[in-house]
Image (cartoon, rainbow, N blue to C red; front, side, top):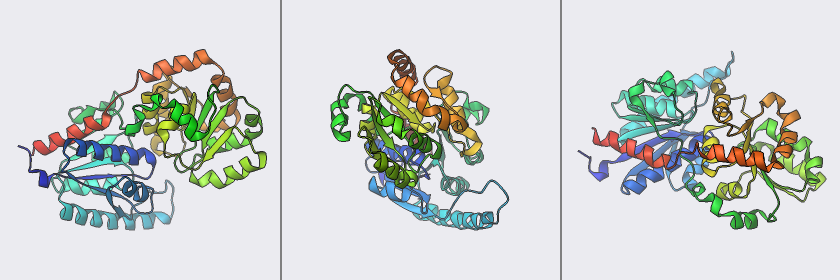
Length: 372
């Protein structure tokens, strides 16, 4: 039997990057769409971007003093261990006070302590694994997890098969209709109709190699008969705007962060991006041709695994981070001129789209409530 609505409380823990935060917010909204009286509390990592983005989306969040281990011998890991103990204690208090029906983890530093404590207290837990190769945290949490929602086939190599549900990755809801917003997108970004548009995503924080590759070719890009929307990320915005100001290319629109990604995708003929799971799901949903440059700074090199899944289906192109400064922009300029190649990539990537993933995950969460 279902619990009374007043007892339907859900903790959602995850963050660190937009790839963890936006799926978490999508799941929260999907839960409220099905059960409007639900109470939802987010748990994130202090000083990470979720502490800004989650309240902006209208949800309450509590931060933990948790951070990632440095992958080499370092005295800084002593502080990481101390903060982990503090986070476990704080997560325990949050779980006791809020008494959730289910705890949901979308990845990121904070999900480890939160879901570990929830599982130990007999609270059903659901993991949302976004990548084709799971990180250490989710592998450890999987032992106690009630359900594991995945976006790639073959994940029984890493998780118990009886816990796996294939749902895809949640994306921002406004992307579903993005391709119907071309006129609005052109006006929003002050672009010309009839000209090819390249969308460069340097990450919500900043992708060093992608940004450097663009900066080195600004002089060439200025003379191209195309338009560029460039999200540099906050870390690289100051240096990027300095370079743009010195060259003054009239065909480049530079941003540190793009809030209207639905319009950015609508305008784009080709996308350059890292290969985070959330971004790949967005590209699939929007049917956008892309060149993926996997980040070398992620656990177990999972972005390369993500990219290969698309490349194997001729649904995207891949350039390694070590080759990107030399090869990325020349390849992008060749590809955006090739309508046939763009069409093939678009047709293949849209076949890989999974729709209403957030709704599917929300249904799995509610099943765990009903099974109690």
